[in-house]
Image 1: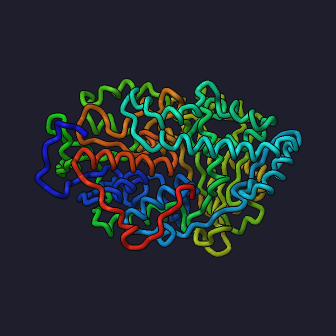
Image 2: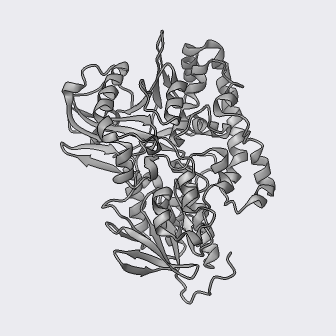
Length: 524
């Protein structure tokens, strides 16, 4: 707790939140449930940030960013602490198969990844019979790893001394910074394709499994242990549910209100400025994209750990080239999620890391209308196509590149059985790295935020209690513990707890327990 903070005359401190993305909404829920007067300022006309679902002409609905819901335990706990029930607010469909993986090569192989372990062992045997027996050891190893590493992900990092906490030291044994994700999985799987089936998830962080730290094997473990879910109506339904519950708690959500800067009185945050009007607050939570927003929101003098030069020189994730397609007719041959893995997957990733647009890219496709008919008109379908590409540091002119790359992406979809697609497209939208930057305010178009290399994790990452300023807190993928919806929700819990400590707030007794909502099991 900052000893220099003034005693607050009010019993209900005012908190301004910049951005109504997942982290901002989670923080709003937690703070409002503990008695704060919370106002969320959102630059767009809808909540959710990149976790939104939009309706396009013709009645097609698309998730803009995340397309599935993973590890609901954390958000379920947040809802319960607010007297709400996640499953009553959002219908979640657990997928089986979780996704289809198509491995290109001289002899292409397709497997359907299933949370049923016996079935998944049979699928792995299509790649390499000897690797099938490694699945259970992989799951057992990561079950221990997650439990040991959870204390690291659930606490703030104030500096090097944090590493000396016994529970942190225990978890760090599993960090293995000398081993990449791919190298770590050699302990369980000998075939590079099998390892890729359990490491391609590093793309959720915008990273290569050949560079990503080994601890992130817990990503694929979470999928098999706890499931992949489709929220009915799209992932934006989760954001909308968070906003509904927040408003029931008294949170004011102000749309079309772009925050221009944080107002300071000396080193202390005193509110935010919107179109030249100052809105007073006792603390400010920043949920805007870190690289894009921080240079304009805060003066450099108050963030000496992250001056403009360091932000400019930091390592960022890849970007994505997106196609959102409304299709006449159904797509019975498509799984809900499909991943096309190019024969030379590592070469693709090396091209991206070198700032080169891949010439034979891997890609991810969601065809969700088969599971959720609300996403398309009767007799129609939707396709969400994501192609990893370099962020804007690659220097490409995407206005010139987009038509060529669109043709290439459509051609690549033939490997998934979509041979007659062009004539059936009834709606189309393209989003390039430049669009991520200009329309969605994503720094460098880096869709997955700051990279998660070891030098940008834990205390090296922008901290939840940010800079030398008093009363400024970060939530979202740009702060500890990192990117991905479950991790962002956990980061919001960390930041909200710090804010409450600093303002002398006492968290409310668990409202869920008082009104009889069952508490989730820790392993759920």
